[in-house]
Amino acid sequence: MIYFDHLSKVYSPTSTALEDVSFTIEPEEFLSIVGQSGAGKSTLLKLLIAEEKPSSGTLFFKTVNVHEIPKTELPFYRRRIGTVFQDYRLLPSKTAYENIAFAMEAAGASNEDIDTDVPQVMELVGLMSKAWHFPNELSGGEKQRVAIARAIVNRPDVIVADEPTGNLDPINTWEIIELLKKINALGTTVILASHSKEIVDALNRRVITLENGKLIRDSKKGRYVL
Image: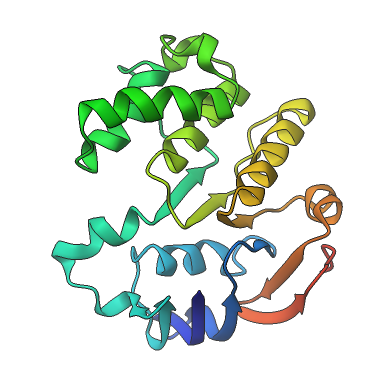
Protein backbone atom coordinates (compact mmCIF):
# COMPACT_ATOMS: atom_id res chain seq x y z
CA MET A 1 0.00 0.00 0.00
CA ILE A 2 2.74 2.47 1.03
CA TYR A 3 6.27 1.94 -0.28
CA PHE A 4 9.31 3.81 1.05
CA ASP A 5 12.02 3.09 -1.52
CA HIS A 6 15.55 4.17 -0.58
CA LEU A 7 14.35 7.50 0.80
CA SER A 8 16.87 10.06 1.99
CA LYS A 9 16.35 13.60 3.22
CA VAL A 10 19.38 15.85 3.53
CA TYR A 11 18.87 19.38 4.81
CA SER A 12 22.54 20.41 4.71
CA PRO A 13 25.99 18.81 4.55
CA THR A 14 25.87 18.46 8.35
CA SER A 15 22.17 17.58 8.70
CA THR A 16 20.82 14.30 7.32
CA ALA A 17 17.32 13.50 8.59
CA LEU A 18 16.85 10.21 6.72
CA GLU A 19 19.34 7.96 4.96
CA ASP A 20 18.38 5.22 2.49
CA VAL A 21 15.18 4.11 4.25
CA SER A 22 13.14 1.33 2.62
CA PHE A 23 10.07 -0.52 3.90
CA THR A 24 6.47 -1.30 2.97
CA ILE A 25 3.27 -0.72 4.93
CA GLU A 26 0.46 -3.15 4.14
CA PRO A 27 -3.27 -2.29 4.05
CA GLU A 28 -4.99 -2.41 7.48
CA GLU A 29 -1.65 -2.70 9.29
CA PHE A 30 -0.98 -1.09 12.69
CA LEU A 31 2.63 0.08 12.65
CA SER A 32 4.63 1.90 15.31
CA ILE A 33 7.62 4.06 14.36
CA VAL A 34 10.01 4.60 17.24
CA GLY A 35 13.32 6.31 17.87
CA GLN A 36 14.86 9.03 19.97
CA SER A 37 14.35 12.71 19.21
CA GLY A 38 16.08 13.51 15.95
CA ALA A 39 15.93 9.93 14.70
CA GLY A 40 13.88 10.94 11.66
CA LYS A 41 10.31 9.99 12.66
CA SER A 42 8.75 13.38 11.98
CA THR A 43 10.59 13.77 8.68
CA LEU A 44 9.31 10.38 7.58
CA LEU A 45 5.72 11.41 8.32
CA LYS A 46 6.17 14.77 6.59
CA LEU A 47 7.36 12.95 3.48
CA LEU A 48 4.28 10.73 3.59
CA ILE A 49 1.85 13.65 3.72
CA ALA A 50 3.94 15.52 1.12
CA GLU A 51 4.93 18.39 3.39
CA GLU A 52 8.55 17.61 2.50
CA LYS A 53 10.21 16.22 -0.61
CA PRO A 54 12.99 13.61 -0.46
CA SER A 55 16.53 14.38 -1.51
CA SER A 56 16.59 10.96 -3.17
CA GLY A 57 14.44 7.85 -3.38
CA THR A 58 10.73 7.48 -3.99
CA LEU A 59 7.56 7.09 -1.94
CA PHE A 60 4.50 5.40 -3.41
CA PHE A 61 0.98 5.49 -2.00
CA LYS A 62 -0.62 2.55 -3.80
CA THR A 63 0.39 3.28 -7.41
CA VAL A 64 0.97 7.02 -6.98
CA ASN A 65 4.42 8.55 -6.64
CA VAL A 66 3.62 10.96 -3.81
CA HIS A 67 6.23 13.54 -4.71
CA GLU A 68 5.12 13.78 -8.33
CA ILE A 69 1.57 14.78 -7.36
CA PRO A 70 0.80 18.27 -8.78
CA LYS A 71 0.23 20.95 -6.15
CA THR A 72 -3.37 21.35 -7.26
CA GLU A 73 -4.04 17.68 -6.47
CA LEU A 74 -2.27 17.51 -3.09
CA PRO A 75 -5.41 18.39 -1.06
CA PHE A 76 -7.18 15.37 -2.59
CA TYR A 77 -4.24 13.12 -1.77
CA ARG A 78 -4.02 14.37 1.82
CA ARG A 79 -7.69 13.56 2.40
CA ARG A 80 -6.72 9.91 2.08
CA ILE A 81 -4.47 10.33 5.13
CA GLY A 82 -5.97 11.48 8.43
CA THR A 83 -3.50 13.17 10.78
CA VAL A 84 -3.53 13.36 14.58
CA PHE A 85 -0.99 15.44 16.48
CA GLN A 86 0.15 15.79 20.08
CA ASP A 87 -1.19 19.36 20.30
CA TYR A 88 -4.68 18.54 18.85
CA ARG A 89 -4.75 21.55 16.45
CA LEU A 90 -8.45 22.23 17.00
CA LEU A 91 -10.05 25.51 15.94
CA PRO A 92 -10.75 27.31 19.25
CA SER A 93 -13.72 29.28 17.94
CA LYS A 94 -15.58 26.17 16.80
CA THR A 95 -17.35 23.52 18.90
CA ALA A 96 -16.31 19.87 18.81
CA TYR A 97 -19.06 19.17 16.29
CA GLU A 98 -18.06 22.16 14.15
CA ASN A 99 -14.37 21.19 14.18
CA ILE A 100 -15.27 17.80 12.73
CA ALA A 101 -17.84 19.21 10.30
CA PHE A 102 -15.26 21.73 9.06
CA ALA A 103 -13.05 18.87 7.81
CA MET A 104 -15.97 17.60 5.75
CA GLU A 105 -16.84 21.08 4.48
CA ALA A 106 -13.25 21.56 3.33
CA ALA A 107 -13.54 18.29 1.41
CA GLY A 108 -16.71 19.50 -0.32
CA ALA A 109 -19.18 17.25 1.49
CA SER A 110 -22.89 18.02 1.31
CA ASN A 111 -24.83 19.27 4.34
CA GLU A 112 -26.78 16.02 4.28
CA ASP A 113 -23.59 13.94 4.52
CA ILE A 114 -22.24 16.18 7.30
CA ASP A 115 -25.47 15.81 9.28
CA THR A 116 -25.20 12.03 8.95
CA ASP A 117 -21.46 11.40 9.33
CA VAL A 118 -20.41 13.80 12.09
CA PRO A 119 -22.75 12.30 14.74
CA GLN A 120 -21.60 8.82 13.70
CA VAL A 121 -17.92 9.54 14.29
CA MET A 122 -18.70 11.40 17.52
CA GLU A 123 -20.48 8.29 18.75
CA LEU A 124 -17.52 6.17 17.67
CA VAL A 125 -15.11 8.25 19.77
CA GLY A 126 -17.58 8.51 22.67
CA LEU A 127 -18.10 12.28 22.58
CA MET A 128 -21.66 12.90 21.43
CA SER A 129 -22.50 14.42 24.82
CA LYS A 130 -19.78 17.05 24.27
CA ALA A 131 -20.75 17.92 20.69
CA TRP A 132 -21.44 21.59 21.40
CA HIS A 133 -18.55 22.20 23.78
CA PHE A 134 -15.68 24.42 22.67
CA PRO A 135 -12.09 23.11 22.92
CA ASN A 136 -11.40 25.16 26.06
CA GLU A 137 -14.30 23.31 27.72
CA LEU A 138 -12.82 19.88 26.98
CA SER A 139 -10.16 17.82 28.76
CA GLY A 140 -6.98 16.82 26.97
CA GLY A 141 -8.34 13.35 26.28
CA GLU A 142 -11.59 14.78 24.92
CA LYS A 143 -9.70 17.18 22.65
CA GLN A 144 -7.71 14.28 21.24
CA ARG A 145 -10.91 12.32 20.63
CA VAL A 146 -12.26 15.28 18.65
CA ALA A 147 -8.99 15.37 16.69
CA ILE A 148 -9.28 11.66 15.92
CA ALA A 149 -12.92 12.05 14.88
CA ARG A 150 -11.89 14.90 12.58
CA ALA A 151 -9.13 12.72 11.12
CA ILE A 152 -11.44 9.81 10.29
CA VAL A 153 -14.63 11.61 9.25
CA ASN A 154 -13.65 11.68 5.56
CA ARG A 155 -12.92 7.94 5.68
CA PRO A 156 -9.18 8.03 4.95
CA ASP A 157 -7.18 4.94 4.04
CA VAL A 158 -4.54 5.78 6.65
CA ILE A 159 -4.34 7.48 10.04
CA VAL A 160 -0.99 9.03 10.96
CA ALA A 161 -0.78 9.65 14.71
CA ASP A 162 2.31 11.65 15.72
CA GLU A 163 2.80 11.29 19.49
CA PRO A 164 -0.99 11.47 20.05
CA THR A 165 -0.72 10.71 23.78
CA GLY A 166 2.23 12.97 24.55
CA ASN A 167 0.12 15.47 26.52
CA LEU A 168 -2.22 12.98 28.21
CA ASP A 169 -2.39 11.29 31.60
CA PRO A 170 -2.14 7.46 31.76
CA ILE A 171 -5.91 6.81 31.77
CA ASN A 172 -6.55 9.01 28.72
CA THR A 173 -3.43 7.62 27.05
CA TRP A 174 -4.74 4.07 27.07
CA GLU A 175 -8.22 5.18 26.01
CA ILE A 176 -6.73 6.88 22.95
CA ILE A 177 -4.62 3.81 22.12
CA GLU A 178 -7.71 1.58 22.41
CA LEU A 179 -9.56 3.95 20.10
CA LEU A 180 -6.79 3.76 17.51
CA LYS A 181 -6.89 -0.04 17.74
CA LYS A 182 -10.67 0.08 17.21
CA ILE A 183 -10.25 2.27 14.12
CA ASN A 184 -7.61 -0.13 12.81
CA ALA A 185 -9.93 -3.10 13.39
CA LEU A 186 -12.54 -1.33 11.24
CA GLY A 187 -10.08 -1.44 8.32
CA THR A 188 -7.99 1.74 8.52
CA THR A 189 -4.19 1.53 8.42
CA VAL A 190 -2.66 3.19 11.50
CA ILE A 191 0.87 4.61 11.68
CA LEU A 192 1.80 5.58 15.24
CA ALA A 193 4.94 7.57 16.03
CA SER A 194 5.69 7.21 19.72
CA HIS A 195 8.37 7.65 22.35
CA SER A 196 6.51 5.39 24.78
CA LYS A 197 8.08 1.99 25.33
CA GLU A 198 5.09 0.99 27.46
CA ILE A 199 2.60 1.68 24.66
CA VAL A 200 4.65 0.06 21.90
CA ASP A 201 5.37 -3.05 23.96
CA ALA A 202 1.70 -3.41 24.95
CA LEU A 203 0.56 -3.15 21.33
CA ASN A 204 2.83 -6.02 20.28
CA ARG A 205 2.43 -5.00 16.64
CA ARG A 206 5.00 -4.25 13.99
CA VAL A 207 7.70 -1.76 15.02
CA ILE A 208 10.05 0.23 12.78
CA THR A 209 13.03 1.62 14.69
CA LEU A 210 14.95 4.64 13.39
CA GLU A 211 18.32 5.80 14.65
CA ASN A 212 20.20 8.81 13.25
CA GLY A 213 18.01 8.72 10.15
CA LYS A 214 18.59 5.04 9.42
CA LEU A 215 16.17 2.13 9.70
CA ILE A 216 17.94 -0.19 12.12
CA ARG A 217 15.14 -2.63 12.99
CA ASP A 218 11.85 -3.87 11.53
CA SER A 219 10.08 -6.27 13.89
CA LYS A 220 6.77 -7.89 12.92
CA LYS A 221 5.57 -8.19 16.52
CA GLY A 222 8.00 -5.90 18.12
CA ARG A 223 9.04 -4.20 21.27
CA TYR A 224 10.63 -0.80 21.78
CA VAL A 225 14.34 -1.58 21.74
CA LEU A 226 16.99 1.12 21.34
